[in-house]
Amino acid sequence: MRIRALRSTLAALAVLAPLALVATSRAAAPAAVPVPAVVSVPAAASVPAVVSVPAAAAAAPAAARALAAAPREDAAAIRRRMVRVLLEETNRNRTAKRLGALTLSADLSAAAQAHAEDMLARDYFAHESPEGESSADRVARLAARAIVLSVRENILKTEGHEDDEPDVRAIDFIDGWMDSPGHRENLLAGDVSQVGFGVASKRVKGRLIEYAVQVLGRTAGTWSGTPPAAVRVPDRLLARLTVPVEFFLEDTAHPKRRYKDPYDAALSWVGGMPLVVLTDAKGSVVELPRLDPGRYRLLGRIAHDDGYQALREIRVLGPFDQG
Image (cartoon, rainbow, N blue to C red; front, top):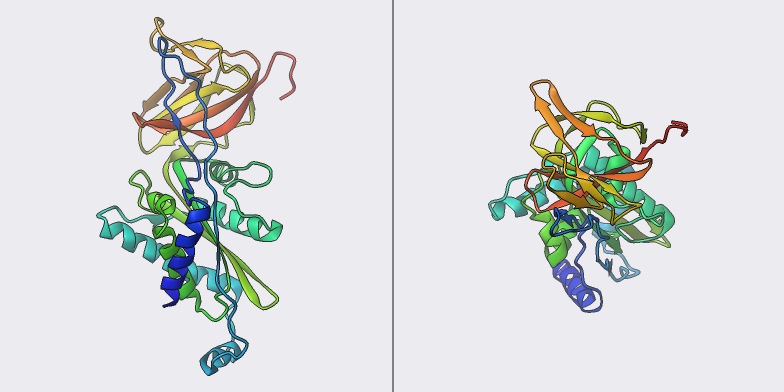
């Protein structure tokens, strides 16, 4: 009955606030002239909803009182227990749709846990932090050497559940996401292979406030070292890719500037240019050509995919700039 009540609450909230919680919208692939296009990664259009569970009655059942008197697990143990159930329930839903099971990623888990704790500490509920940091930004910051693409994120906040076991709360999180079209699309995405979870909670006047975050993605490889924030061009980035990846350098300061295609001199691009990637048995080299000084954004996608994802900001230094 309680799970049905949670679903009813989500359905009622959906009337007021759509639950299309796509974390990072991937931009359409930039087009070569004569079909010019500005490469951009638009912000996710999503309005999260808070799930509120009515407070328990003042007279707790005898079983609940006995549970409260029992030794409590520490927060880390509870989180590990919930993550195990979250992974099991995620993969149960995916395999039921004949989709591949996801593996738990330490990189994605770090980003998910950091976001859950930040929302709890600063009392907000959104995919982007108050400073504008997105889920993909968090992955790039906390796993600087990983090349993670197709990043998606689900978030949920609950109030109540004081008497529920951690396993039950974890199952409710997945049920809530599966009952929402936007969350469900993320959870059942076919372009992801890893997942991470974050859970953070506190009690306020006896009520349990809890945030859950699920970050999904696909690790396409690793950089040989943490890419520098500032470079002098021409330069190169070394990587070991597990799948073919295409990179694009977006000129964020000059979205209408034209660039020559590095492979075909008859073509030009608007707002940036694709980068040459050379691959052999030792790894891959991403070439950074000669460019005007300024700020650029490195984008990436699985080869021939529909859209790019922002990976990191790169500053190209001028002859008199300090590195």
